[in-house]
Length: 116
Length: 112
Image 1: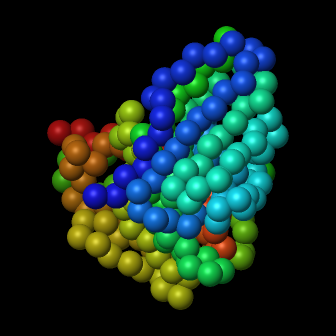
Image 2: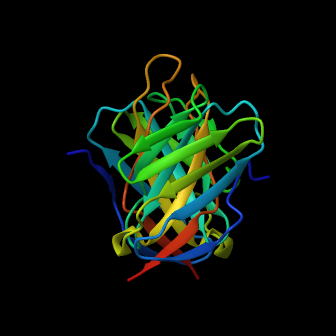
């Protein structure tokens, strides 16, 4: 069965702290994504990666960075957390071939981050 | 600037009736569209998709319609069931691209 696992379901951090959100997929997918979900705004793409060590900015990359050292793992990093980064963070993966193939995303269960 | 828009935040229908969820997009480069369903405390799951070379795709009770000239798609659920109550997200992407853009979602409530 397809699995995308996010390391923490709930986190509470303080303003200025560094935050790591980890995501692991077991499907050997090339593409991995980080979205944040906010009421009224839906899912907004932060960063995605189509290969190891490759990354592309999404629509709202400011305040975030990512790391993809291994194919199965994609990490989202908040260098200095701020209250406006309080949100639900969703990791996803999809199959890609060469230039990319359109297909469904498989999502993790989400990580709810609260920044105080 | 949201490239994919779902203008109805919520929809309520009676069990057994049709549910119609709408989605509009602004980027004419999008050529593949998907619907996802999300229950509380879970990640979204894929429901149905459609390529821009088609105008309709069916899967059981779910049908997606695409009107390229209007940049509009819709999801029809017939008949609606209480278990369909969830948030539905419309998504769009391009072939030979790796990113996917989502709408804000529509919360569907199906009343018994």
